[in-house]
Image (cartoon, rainbow, N blue to C red; front, side):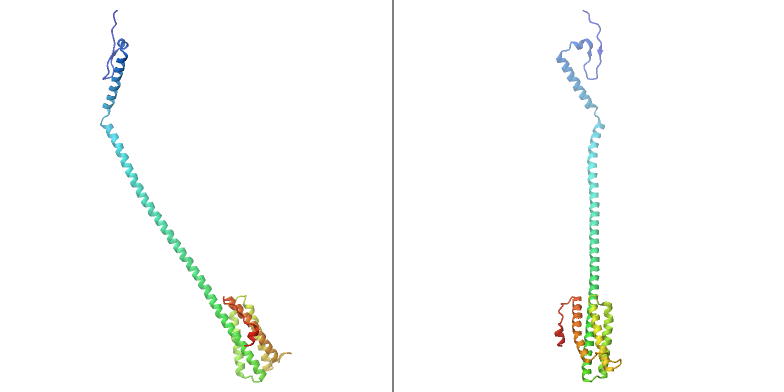
Length: 257
C-alpha cells in the first residue's frame, strides 16, 4: 500500500518536527520523552529571555525598598523629635501658668488677710479709745458727784468734767463709722446714760436750768452705779468682736472698784 505525501509541521525552535501520519505511530514513551524535551526547552528559552533589564529591575526594587525604609525611619525620627519638643514646651507652659495662677491666688489671699488684719486692728484701737473715754467720763462724773455732796466743787473739776465729756463724744462719733452693729447699741446705751448723769449733776451744780423734780445727788449716785453694768456689757461685746476671750466683769465686782 502506497503512502501519500507527508506534510511536515514546523514547531518552535528546539522542538522535534512531526508529521501528521507519523504522530499516530509514536509510542507513549516517545510522546512523554518528546513532551519532556519541549517543557525543558521552553524553560530554557524563558531563562534565556531574562536579559540585564530584568535583573536590573529586580535589583532596583530591592534598592528602592531599602531606601524607602531608611527614609521612613528618618522622617519618623524627625517627627518624633519635633512632637516631643512641642509636648515638652506645652507641659512647661502649663506648669508656668499653674505657678502664676497659684502666685496670684496667694497674693489675693495675702491682700485679703492683710485687709482683715488692718480692719481688726483699727477696730481694736477704736474699742480701746472708746472704752477708755467712757471710763474717764464715768470717773469724772463720780468725782463731781462727791464734790457736790461735800459742797467743794471747783472750776478745775468742772473743766475736767467738760474735757472728759468732749473726749467721750468724739470717740463715740468715730465709733459710729467703725463699730459693728453687734456692739454699737451697747456703746450708745453707755453714752446715753453717761449724759443723763451729766445733766443731773450740772443742773444741781449751776441751778440753771433748775434741777428737775426728783433729781438729787442720791439719784446721781444710783445712776452712776447702774452704768457699770452697761460698761461691762459693752466691753464684753467688744472683746468678742475682736476674738478676745469673753470674761465680763460682774456688776457687783465693778461696783467695788
